Amino acid sequence: MPRYAIKTKVDITRSNPARDDQDSVKHAQQSNFNTLIQGIGMRANIEWSSDPYRAVHEGEAEWFWDFETEQVDVFLENNDPVGLLKKDINGVPIIKNLTNTADLKTPVFKTFGDDQNIWIESV
Image 1 (cartoon, helix red, strand yellow):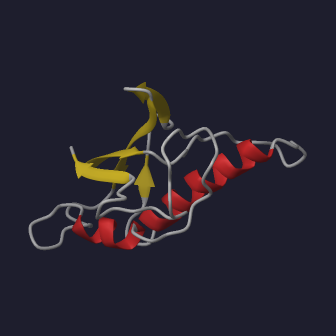
Image 2 (image 1 turned 90 degrees about the vertical axis):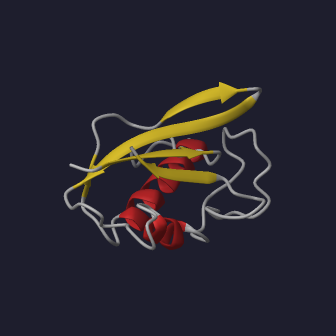
């Protein structure tokens, strides 16, 4: 199965809060993760063996996550194995100001440009 890796400055923690959990940060984290999965799911069915994890690099929090798809080249565009996925995810709204440390100026996933906050690659 083709494998893909994501690095992002957006808090995509898979927190799985219960419905009666009053922690708004957990609910927002889960919403960002769900949004990412739904964006990817527009083109592919995915599987993953581990949830996103947070790491701090040079004082800045980043999240890392790997997933697999059933089909080969499902995101291929112009020799970029993730070209379509980058287009699909770019501009999708997120909830900012959670446990991220980066200044996310615009509350969206940005796959291009100076304010890029998510990187996707085929591995």
